[in-house]
Amino acid sequence: DALGHPLIDNTVANHSAFDIDPTVFVDDDGQAYIYWGSFSSPRAAKLKRNMIEIDELDGGGGGATGPRVPGRLGNAVRLNGVADYVSLPSGIVSGLNDFTISVWVNPAAISTWSRVFDFGTGTAVNMFLTVNAGAGPRFAITVSGGGAEQRLSRSGQLPLNAWSHLAVTLSGTTGTLYVNGVPAATNPGMTLRPSDLGVTANNWIGRSHGAMVDFASAA
Image 1 (cartoon, rainbow, N blue to C red):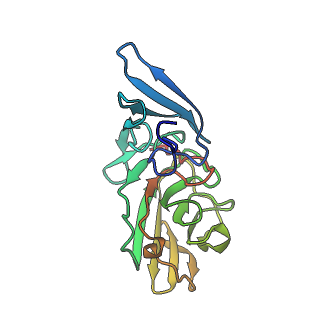
Image 2 (tube, helix red, strand yellow; image 1 turned 180 degrees about the horizontal axis):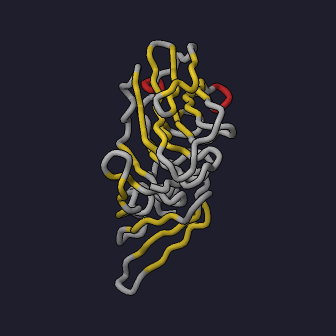
């Protein structure tokens, strides 16, 4: 082919773990767009005139185009659980060692493995916070796949359509997951740091590296 490699792959910000079934549409003005399928939603990109370069990715993925609504503090981004998510800059956690990450969430669904955030380069190298790992919220970090995750897990689901505060802290080798200000899980053997992930290419709020559903927020 003209490129010698895929136009859409895991280096593209709007890619999915299951990029399939591409097609191209040319509108009446001659502008070409490429559409493709994924695990959870359709995706799209605007093409340059040469048809082998991306001009602009669809704002529905990574742009968090869902409405800004009243939040717990100021405004919040509403995520639809299909294609809305927030994409943060590459390498945003590369220099992070001890840390605290906190967030207010108002879930419209407690879908298993839906991500509050997922920072990394793929399913083998990432750190994430999910509202539901089967029994409740979980933070995990790994550099060699899910079987080698260092985890903080809490038993008990968050309420739907209500605000909950989640926070993850790491100090030394002790990690703690807080739910509404109360320690919900502690792990004294967490030796991995965000800096161990290297330069993370994909840093998402509301989206997963794996074949998981996106996070849906009520507000």
